[in-house]
Image (cartoon, rainbow, N blue to C red):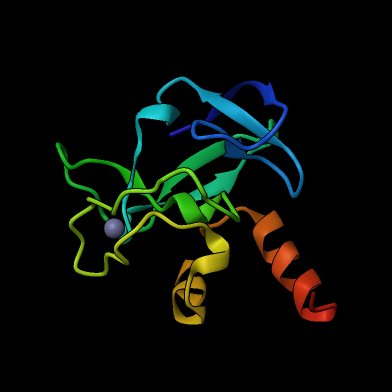
Length: 129
Ligand SMILES: [Zn+2]
């Protein structure tokens, strides 16, 4: 599913999507209705506009919900105070950002996440705060 952007926003908020290391935007089209799962059937591939295309990570049957992990494109998520309701066996209990994923989960997601997340990890590993 091709992602499209509605426009940039000044900062991160509960409906914003990270689109680079320092920018956030709102997605248009069907993107905003794709729900989070801690064990998603789609990954995120950033297209030439900066939007997230949803790419299947496994076979998806007709009628199945398309999901992705919000951590696949947002380094930090601070606007989901309640618990995660995805129902996956691998549910981590809350909707978190990339920075909060285990190394094992990050390795499982390689190739399905926004490249700026990997750049931030590399930068932090080179110069820990
Ligand atoms: Zn979950």
